[in-house]
Image (cartoon, rainbow, N blue to C red):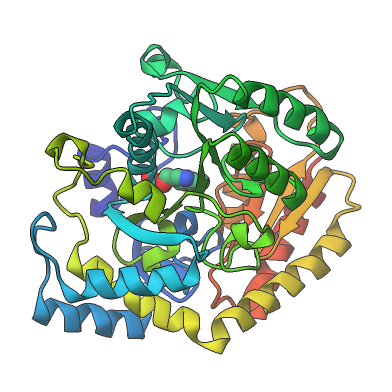
Amino acid sequence: MSKLLQEDEKYTWHPFTQVQTESTPLPIIKAKDATLFAEDGKTYLDCNSSWWVNTHGHGNQYIKEALIKQFDQIDHVIFAGATHPKAVELSKRILDFLPSNMARTFFSDDGSTAIEVALKMVFQYWHNKNQPKMKMMAMEGAYHGDTFGAMSIGHRGYFNKPFEHLFFDVDYISFPTEDKEAEILKDVENQFKTNEFAGLIVEPLVQGSAGMCMYRPEFLEALFVLAKKHEVLIICDEVMTGWGRTGKMFALEYIQTQPDIICLSKGLTAGVMSLGLTVTTSLVFEAFLAPEKTKALLHGHSYTANALACAVACANLDLIEKPAFFKNIERITEQHAAFRSRIKVHSKLKEVRQLGTIIAFEVQLEESDSSYFSSIRDEAYHFFLSKGLLIRPLGNVFFLNPPYCSTNEELEKMYSGITDFLNQLT
Ligand SMILES: Cc1ncc(COP(=O)(O)O)c(C=O)c1O
């Protein structure tokens, strides 16, 4: 074992990892574009964009220059009582990408903290208006992060069992398969009529951690219309679906009704710095304006609006504004669609789902075990590694959401790995 791995084993604790039984991590010492380089000379394609963050791939020179330039200006300054140009530039520019009702940005550190901020905005909005409402509506199978508020509104199961007694009151909408949409909407309306709901939160159109479960924009539209009708604040969690992943800049562009709060992170800085954003309307913002300090959003993080992260996010927006950005998204979407029509008849597949640059393959299981801990998960993970592909399956579902710089040849290599894996299943 190399010194890096020995010391990793001795000193670190990895996320979502049963350290006692799992194999050693990949010792990655360099990354460029879609490729990760291991210290033993092996290379791997980063097929999941390192948990969705490296949208342009790795080592982007334009972002690097922006980071260095910013370092010479200002690295960080406390954001309570001070401001800096890149935080303001980012706020102003991000609003241009979002629905017209969005007016204010609140900075935090990552996806989970962006969600925490959104939840606090929702509950305190009603508190400040002297109409406290205690409940949230979320969707079964949801994942919104690993902090306590985010876990509370996520799917309840083995991931958060030890903490469940600490969670607040949430009602769950069943996952809206097309045949159940009408019935679900009827139930939701009955719930909303109780006037107990402060807010509704959704992963728009794609539930990521649930296994890339996709539902129709028509359902999302109808759900948002109901929430508006009953004055339930809508949080749209675009942490994963944002930045072109679904084929549009944001998944909410597939519908007309605008949410009250949007959470952003992951591709916001293209994998270079950690940053979260909770964006909201003037209506929500103004509910926090009062002579009393206690009505303010008394929330903040030491790294709030870190200037390096903001500069990187602005450079990321420059790249997003270039025609190549959506050209690559269209190219990958088309390649995925062509592969989908080739592979979907495979006898080992239950379903292939695609939206934009996300394509997911659900393997048909013999046994009833289709959970995250299904043994096929480890088998697939190691098979893909042996083919030079880093793909992190979710139980019996594995998926591709490659960096947009991935070449057609690299995409074909990913598809071949998947085909080979399915072919060798007995
Ligand atoms: C939809 C969604 N929301 C929130 C989060 C949490 O983001 P983070 O891991 O940056 O805390 C994730 C992470 O995967 C996510 O997929």
